[in-house]
Length: 191
Image (cartoon, rainbow, N blue to C red; front, side, top):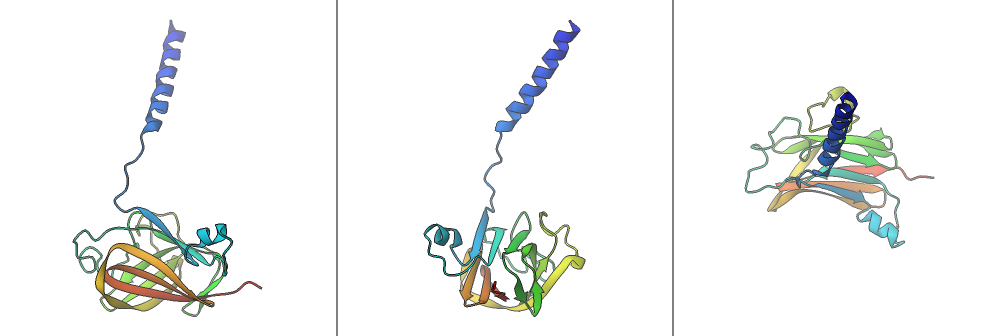
């Protein structure tokens, strides 16, 4: 009798664990996106139309404005911001790059911003796989760069990041609401 009871308990536990695996999380309000440098890298690769090596890829969540005033209200000035929503924004460099006269070795990093009304301090940090900036530690900063902000005539509904490539010079454009900031960097060509 006792053996039947134990078998029944094991069956119930297995059934519950299997049953629980069919529950999926709902679609997030701030979906993840990827931006490549060069733009559309995977498509160009498949079409055998690559002219430049893979330089960088940024993975980020794309929150929407939804009628809100973003900067100063939702995203506070002079406080570290995750540059998106949910997980910390991450950038992977596939080659060594130079940002603000600092060599940044190829690898994966988190990105965050300290926004001000007239400039952003863009931060590349060693800490990855984190939620927001709760684990942010200035001691893990690889490089910081102050960049001016541009006020846009047409607001951008969802946070957007893209790259512009000109020879070995790259501009990473970050825009949301009526603000745009650009992080310039140079990649070191492989020999």
